[in-house]
Length: 373
Image 1 (cartoon, rainbow, N blue to C red):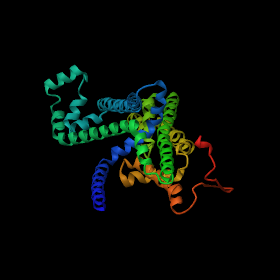
Image 2 (cartoon, one colour):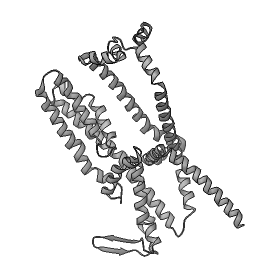
Image 3 (spheres, one colour):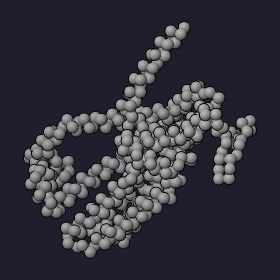
Image 4 (cartoon, one colour):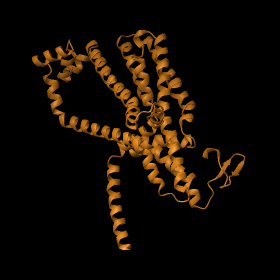
């Protein structure tokens, strides 16, 4: 009997190692999927009031976040291409770029960038340099695109089935319960993860609104040459950039200031740079600093220390890569929750003792609590 148990345990260990290796290989999309799961779970449960099937609610929850994000990124790329072509055609820099890269010059001279115009340019051979350039970079482009599609597919599928079967997985974990220790840890960690990761989503939305209002108000008082281009789009991108630690929103409003100042510098109207400097000051204070000091503590979870959470956002991408932006807070919450619940009981302490500035209050284990009802 012991030999059979040993063989089964050995087989289980081998399976666990294989699963762990696969999870490590795709740690980035799996981490993003966990973030999306906790970001959409409240909406998924609230849609139950409409008596929709679980599969429909999961699809709607993902669509309300995924479709706007994809549309926003696609619209951004389109506007960048349009503005780049307009800039290349308007300023003398087009001649320099065209001299070094013939396909760039040909695109700058393309007079009718519609479907018919592109077909005519292809037939005349005007697009041949661009086609040759893309053909040379085809392996790199194909590898990058296939990897992006694969990771996106993993994120969508894992998030979808976490919404559908997350409660079943939670119930399976509770089968290992021992004196309510596992249950207490899992429920506390689950609630804190939702508070922290859902707080990230709320922070993005709040900063996006603040940035849109700020950029629009700046355009009201600023002269046309130094206005912020597409303030609504720029504000939404600023909110998304707030997820990135340290540099965060600076990767949006600093390039915006640079883009706004280029026509002024090329037009020798340097007096208007005062407005650009004012925009940088307003963006740094109103969009970047004040929301970070006022809003982030409210969106940082129920018990997780704000300072530790900020350090997790900073060190996460350094240690794990970009997905560390989501992985490090998850690891921090799991570790702190374990220290506050299971570790205390394992060391013989009483996790029901709640300390505050006035001392400690001991709660009788047999006493019923309000949250139990």
